[in-house]
Structure formats: structure tokens, C-alpha cells
Image (tube, rainbow, N blue to C red; front, side, top):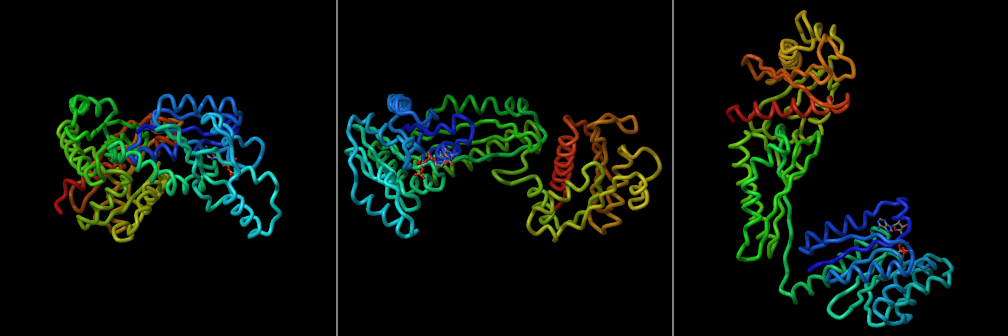
Length: 426
Ligand code: ATP
């Protein structure tokens, strides 16, 4: 089943409002297993709305049109649909009754114009209004259909779920097409998009060739998400939610195995799981507490970590030691350059001692735009000490402006911690 979306409103074309209705509808159609190959936005002009509807119907099984159902003269979606259906409009008494009641309940006089909202193309049925004054419409055209809903986002959503989705499901069942589409996002840190794509090249090609016997489908897409790493989105279409979930679980396992073998431990979570969630889970599982010493990140790492509910169990605190003298006095960083591996390791050790934690994580570097201690902007050192083991450190060269360097530095430090925790016994 293919459904096209047409958003009506000159304000959309002028960029005065963003077309969030189409985005929402696109997402919800996809999860209902409905394909949507085109979205159109069109102004409040009958000839152009008619053209948009005819174009949509020529290449899809139906259309959802949002907006233009209001009471004013420029709300002409009803008239446009009637023209496409080649029928007239009739005034529906039951709708008039409800509009009158709504105005009486608000103790306001009803402008005559509002009666236009009771006009319905002959042959259409209505989706009753529960929130605003305009009802939605279900307009059959042979075996195709136009659904019309108000532009006001909360009215549109409620009507989609109550009136459109059940009708779409019924139509899909008649066609024997009932299906659901579900996605899962596998999140990685530390590989480039091209490196990841190369590792998964064969699997992607295999899926392209595959014709599942039961009609189910599975696709893989790569999404670069900047400072949050590279995401691999798996999308499955199947006959039921359980079947789609099973396909996704199986594929997630396969992807993790391939990536792990080719690129190492770069997967840190799925869907909404963040890097700090991954770190938090490992700290809980290993029974270890954490103390931080942050220079260029100025508390960013601590802020991310304390976002995780229950952080007080394992988070001791963070010393934001920006000034070199503070690093030496509070963290016992020895004389010498403060942007160095030795300083990062000393900060980790100093944080562990000062905060009484099992683990110390220290970070120092040059956020830019100017260089410091002859080090280029983007040069960052992360130091880590776990219990009484000797401290380790990592040198990074991070791209971007001051803000990006600080953000990249924070997630890189968290990732070093995550990998080191993975190597610890439970
Ligand atoms: P009503 O019956 O309440 O008058 P309507 O069907 O006439 O609704 P419009 O007048 O087109 O809808 O839009 C009403 C409001 O809904 C707009 O001012 C805008 O804020 C919002 N809106 C309309 N279309 C969209 C869209 N595609 N995406 C997001 N918001 C929208």
C-alpha cells in the first residue's frame, strides 16, 4: 500500500512554519508498513491543490491531505477534493449541530463562516471532530482514497490514529498486505562511516539480493551523527510486530559479530542508549566508582554522566581543574607541560585520590582556537587509572572548532573508559 502526503498551506511554502505534520505522518505510516514515496507541500490555491491531489493519486493508492479545513475563505481543501472527485458539496446537519454545540459550550457567538466546515463532498464519510471544529474526511475514489485532516498538529495526530489508521489497516487486510515496519539503531563510536560501510559491504549486498520467502524485508543504512558517532539503522518489514522484532534481534547479533571481528568493540548501544548509559551499566556491573579530573571539557563529562538516573551509586564527583596551578595543587600534577600524557595520567591518579574512587579519569588538551604549550588545537590526552593498576593514557587529535573539540573529547574519554571496563572482570 502506497500513501502520499499533501500538506496544504501557503505559510509552509513561505517557510513561516515547518511541515512537521508530514514528518510525523511519514514516520507513522512507515511503522504501519505503508510506503510513502512522495510528500508535497502546496499553497492555498484550489487549482494547485487539485493538481497536487491528482498527481498523488496517479502514483499512489491514496493521499492524506493535512490543512485547509478551517472556516475561512482560504481554507479550500474540501472544495478541491470535491473537484477531484467530480462531485458537489453537501452541508451535513450532524456536523452543524456539533459546531453549534462547541460554540455554545464556549459561550461564544458562531460566525456564519464556520458552517462551511459542515460541507462534505458527496460520497465522503467523516472522521468526527473531538478537539477542533473541523471534522476529517474519508473520500473514496474507486479503490483509492483521499483522507483529509486539519492542519493543527494535535488534531491531525488524533484523527490519524482514530480515523485513518483503522481504515488503512482494513484496506491493507483486503489486499493481503498487512505488515509492520520496525527499525533498530546500532550505535558505534571510533570507526569512520566508510570503514563501517566497508566492513558491512558484503552483508548489505547479500540483503539486497535476498528475496525472503515470506515477503519480509530487511535493509541497512548508515547515518553519520557527528559527535555521537556513526549509527547503523536496521529496518525490517514483516507480517507482525513479533516477527519484525525477531528479524531485528537476529540482525543486530550478526552486525555486532561482523563489526567486532573487523573493527573491534565499537558498538556501544542500541536505539536511545547513549555512551554514558553504556559506561553507567558497566560501572554498576563491575561494582566500581568513578572520579574525574577535567580541564578542557570543564565538567562536560560529569554533566553527561550525572544525566543517567542512579548516577549517585557510582559517581563520586569531578574536579574541574582548568588553571595549571589548580592541577598541581589539587591533583598533584608534577612540573612539566600540562597538555601531555604524563599530566593526564597524573590528573587521573589525583582525581582517584582526591575523590576516593576506584577509577580516576583525567582529561587535558587544547580546545583552541590558539595553540598551547606548542600543542595544536584538537590535541587531547585522556588518562585512566583503575584501582592500583598503572595509569594508561590515550592521545587524540580531534577536528573542529572549540565546541566540537570539547564535545569529541568528552565522548572519546567516555569511550576509553567503556572499553577499559569491558576488559575488567565482573
Ligand atoms: P482548523 O480547522 O483548526 O482551522 P485547518 O485544517 O484549517 O485547521 P490550517 O489552517 O491549514 O488547518 O492550519 C492550522 C494551523 O496548524 C496552522 O496555523 C499551523 O500552525 C498548523 N499547521 C498547519 N499545517 C501544518 C503542517 N503541515 N505542519 C505543522 N503545522 C501545521
